[in-house]
Length: 255
View 1 (cartoon, helix red, strand yellow):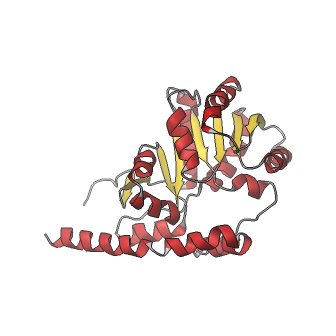
View 2: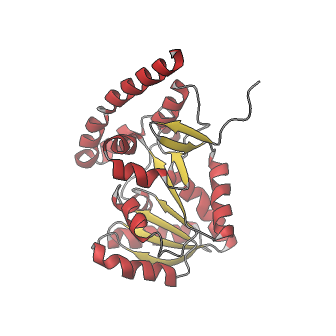
View 3: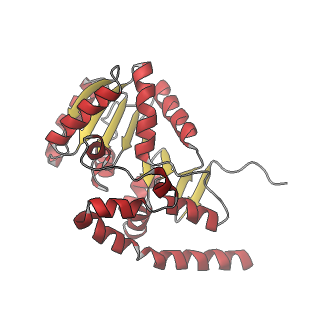
């Protein structure tokens, strides 16, 4: 019999955490309790996995993140294809939604960074309605220059933030954390993509059944055709890297 499974699943150079949603939340709580360093969580979907293959600098930023989860069902399917299955899809937006009731109960202070000012205000108001006891300790929209980042970091630190949620597109949100990692005095940071726009009521998430069959991308394209359409077409180019990886693993197996 083999030994216990590794806590990581290696896919295309990315060490994914072998976790369920409750296990991911437990990791977050442990990071907040420890507070000795910044823990960055990133959910990787097919679009980001393609970007990682193309952009070495972005790949380096992702690999150093302390928590990496499968944000898309295709990532779970790929792990099964290569015989080292991830237990389930754990999108960042699901981590956020599962974490907010915990934050409300335990008094964790949440800072929201990203999207347009109007949508940010709506998202914060709606989150406050859903979680009346939630401490939203600060907010900042996602429209700023690099030279503003020192001020933003200071604002986040001054708010005594426990959880920093960043709703900015990749790779901008990851680069923000990378540039300011040493200065941020926050135990947990996570990018949440378009979560604030969803909470503001601009878009909706796909029904659970659509998510489970890996078709959430189609739901998003229907709502944001101009932005998501070209991205989906670009993601088809991932087949090149998939075939290359299949060939590499086959050669390795029979070497």
